[in-house]
Length: 420
Image (cartoon, rainbow, N blue to C red; front, side, top):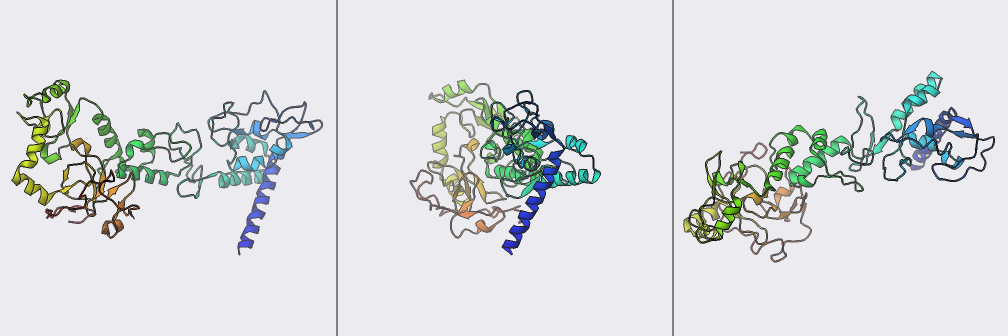
């Protein structure tokens, strides 16, 4: 069976080569002077009374609209001519028109020029069918052949218009690539999947591929892309602060113009005046750190005193879990939806993502669980950790997996994909 399939493939390849050779005959012209081949640069010493193809001069272009340098060279040598029409029809020849050699696009046929040369209607129809079948690229994610132009006439799009190569990833895989990055929290570093490109994606590029849920709706695992980009850009401003009200659930933030004075005041013994008020929920917040206001106390005094309150600490230990991150003191409460938790930096956390059940910290874009964790087989899936966590490894704190006083509230998975 394998030999039969190989023989059939070879026969089809020979048939395609012969057909493209017949098409190339319409572009043959007699050489008038000696020239250099503008593909390999060799001198054509057998130019007298020879017929050379002008296919690449007349019927080929780069997707960036570069054209063959016809003024400097008129012909291709016989070696470079062989099989060139077939390879270009399949878009397998990288552009060599760019004098700087930076273009990574593949050359493409001008179909209108070829149709004008072919006078026979049957052969012209065969050429159109051949071109539509063979103009494909291999998706660099799922490795299947994808047409450059779909059946409804829609052209395949590059990951970003600034990419210096042809489309290399199909639209469904690009949508999956974007939604996975949003869900994993790595949306700020979204890049073209081509390993030789890696140009960062912009909002217009994401909007061209992502589904509506990723762009506009609030999804269980993360913020939608446009909202996440906007909030991240705000968080980088030195004069912007997020509100800590409603037990950290207020999503309001605002620009605070007196932060430099507040920082100076907080270092003195007379701290407590560094306060800003949320315009949405009315909560008074500290200008210096990401927590509630603390009149008459420095940030260190407030933070230390918060955990020294015996009643508060008993309640927190019953309803919260400690972040497993090394050096992190954050306590986190789960109030529904997915098992993937974020120790939010804007609330004073360390920024790691981890599983609520097994406490394993997720590397960027990967869900790795402890052996036996049932969430590994859940909606988001995941794998087993490659290296078992160990306190003191710079990633996990001592006692990272222990929450002996935790009882829960019963609302930990409320609303998780229809569960209640």
